[in-house]
Image 1 (cartoon, rainbow, N blue to C red):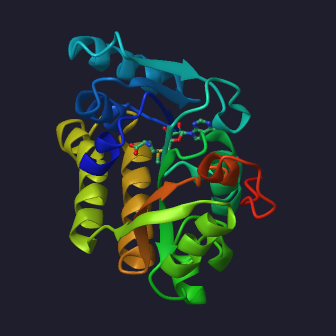
Image 2: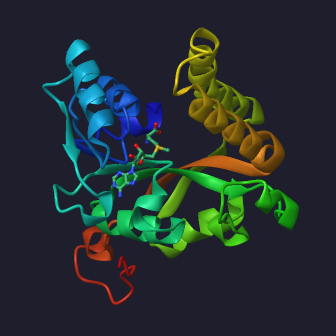
Length: 238
Ligand SMILES: C[S@@+](CC[C@H](N)C(=O)[O-])C[C@H]1O[C@@H](n2cnc3c(N)ncnc32)[C@H](O)[C@@H]1O
């Protein structure tokens, strides 16, 4: 975050921003930045707008409902995409799109899953329906995908397993707390089944197998911006 704020971004777009927590942190750390969050979930955005107004950042942080893959808004000098690569259909497609959207010299903060090791058929069967070994790269492959998209890796970081455990436990805790308080509610069976299924995907499926990486990436400036004249060796940027 310190490195990104140090880059002094002016236009930040968070694709698949959810509740906008990271965007607010970026806005706080980078006081010159105008920040836009894009998401298809209107309910999440309503909550994001409210929290942003409550924290007094709404003069610089705003939210747009829409499909990230059809973005035609301002070109960011910092594009953020945390756990939302599926908006473009795949990791490779997301990285390629983000590389094309960000200004030359700009930054991309991209977080996505990666296989810690090749999954077995039994592990794949314990995960979400339709999960396939092709859904994610390994960490080297994920980084290669960013490079193939025309970006250069400034940092490659993977979350610790304890952070994953914390994330999944936190996600389930809301449902579990509600179930403890409302055992006879007509919605209880459905919510209990959802929580149990999610716990199964985690503990029987992806725990210790699926990692989550944060890549801090930059799009190279065009060669002519370095040398002053157009170069035949300009990096193809898609
Ligand atoms: C796993 S959540 C991550 C949310 C947020 N980036 C975070 O780290 O907390 C994925 C988000 O992507 C959003 N999303 C899914 N498809 C999208 C699309 N086509 N365009 C924009 N947002 C999308 C979802 O609504 C959801 O908020």
